[in-house]
Length: 92
Image 1 (cartoon, rainbow, N blue to C red):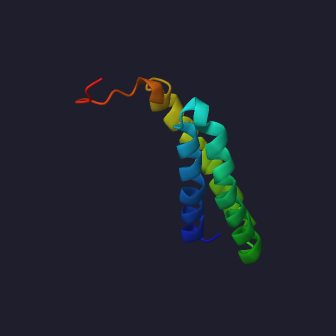
Image 2 (tube, rainbow, N blue to C red; image 1 turned 135 degrees about the vertical axis):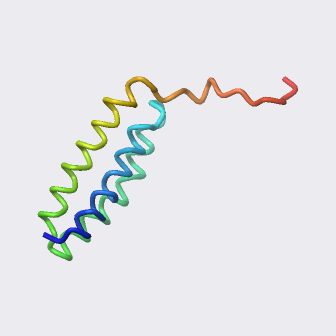
């Protein structure tokens, strides 16, 4: 198993999971549909380079890291709603 490929896949898989996790609830379907494109590119790269083991282990590690982030930070700091954004200095 190649360590650099494993680290690359961990970041490449973990970042979209993190983005989806921290997305506003109303926009999650749109974000999920947009992230299908990079997911397909990652899948094709895995099949082309025949690095299935690294990809599966990276997926598991990325899920564990994102779960730990959610458990330690995300639960106590939920994603806010865009309806509550207030622009300072507007004359409304």
